[in-house]
Amino acid sequence: MMISEKMIPLMKNNSAIRMMFEEGKKLAAQYGKENVFDFSLGNPSVPAPAEVNQAIRDVLEEEDSLFVHGYMSNAGYEDVRQAIADSLNRKYKTEFGVNNILMTVGAASGLNIILKTLLNPGDEVLTFAPYFVEYGAYVRNYDGVLRVVPPNTETFQPDLATFESMIGEKTKAVIINTPNNPTGVIYSEQTLAGIGDVLERKQKEYGTSIVLISDEPYRELAYDGAVVPFVTKFYRNAVVCYSYSKSLSLPGERIGYLLIPDELEDSRDVFQAATIANRVLGCVNAPSLIQRVIKRCVDAEVDVAAYDRNRNLLYNGLKELGFSCIKPEGAFYLFVKSPTEDEKDFCDVCKSFNVLVVPGSSFACPGYVRIAYCVSYEQIERSLPAFKKIAMHYQLV
Ligand code: PLP
Image (cartoon, rainbow, N blue to C red; front, side, top):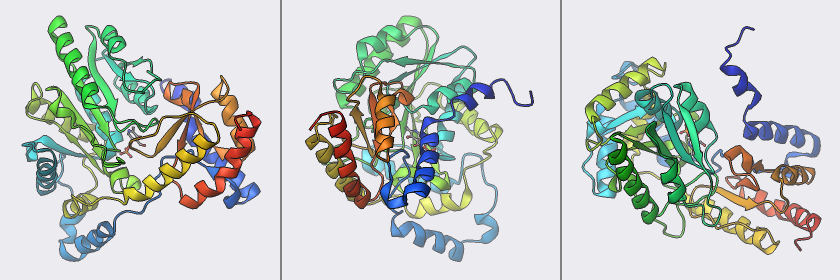
């Protein structure tokens, strides 16, 4: 066998989301693109703000070509990191500096870098279902063990009592994601304070250090004036994995950062180790051109109102048809309760009406499906009659 044994399970589980995406392409070829309603992939549907494209042009015209396309410090350009720290300080009244920001190849690499930095073989990482399915693979990359706190399907805020009971001597890190993929829930201040209290208590009890890793690609995508609480205010040993993939609609450009506050235990060592992890993982540094662009658009935002219109149309439409789900406060996903016990059957029925959605079991939360509403408003409008047929199939209307 040519390939590594570690790759075999990964190939078997090749993401249900990706498979659904491929399925969508096949159906579109068969029935025509306008008759297939693909809600499977979290690819932004709102273009990057105009200032991003302008900044790309300006960087190429105004900055030295050898510099723009060159290597730099593995942690990224200092002026870019300072600009990000200043922006955070303006928004959150914090005091971060250049040495707290490490530029990464999106949140995916931020997570891999921090896990490589922290984990010894056998260390446990906790996360809350439903969760972004790649966490399992990322943790296994460094011979860690992912343990999943079962979902609290009442509110989709974490169940803190169960969380506390699952923390042990081997717990090294906890990954949270807010606003959440796939539920759209924003963890409340009360939740974050609760997580912080539990972790403080458990650190004392075991004499260990537990790092709270906050995965935040959807930080800027919040609706109805909802505020996304800033995690470092609630717990000392916290780091943030940020990404511009969704906040500036740049997923293919692969850019984000890790925030490693001074308050974190052994902060300087962690920062240095993370910088080396970035290099030895083969990223070397985050892409240069787009770092230069981020400096010029550090406070730019995508048109969140467009996602909000989609959210309201789909949420109200599905509720009227008798489907059950909580209203998302952020991100661009709806997590809908399956009208039948096995949500994979529900996904198949949806597919028979050319509607593609992702089973909740892909997020360790069976009985639900994820609908990504980062699509055109027209697609949602056109899909509602198909959802009506699905609702009729289950006698919801
Ligand atoms: N974390 C979550 C919760 C996500 O939904 C995604 C992408 O969809 C990522 C991380 C990866 O983001 P990036 O494109 O920044 O690597």
